[in-house]
Image 1: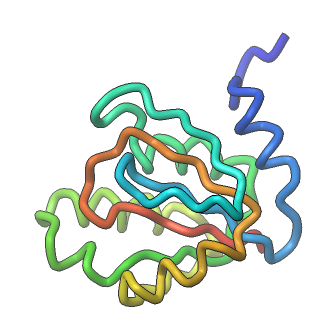
Image 2: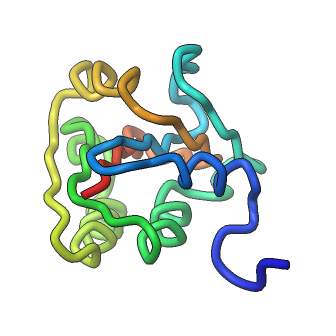
Length: 132
């Protein structure tokens, strides 16, 4: 029996298939459904869990080389929310962060190994992680 780390068997299975330079999307509750990639829905209710909750659980065991985020995130969220995301990204040693228009962000999604859908309600709070 697992005593720490990720308990959700679907998330474990998805993450175990990520290899060098593969990508994984962590999305908010309203992100569009992508039938061409596997989606693991862990949303419980509005705001639970958050994108950062998932990132913080994945980061210790997932070698993250790149993070993508929509440029619009910084335009619509308050300073405290932006600081929480920036702090979480900065804590991932060696990861580079790229901000791009949301329309271009969504073009990267079909190439991902999968998507983890959260209950997060942060506007444009979606991220794409690339393994190093």
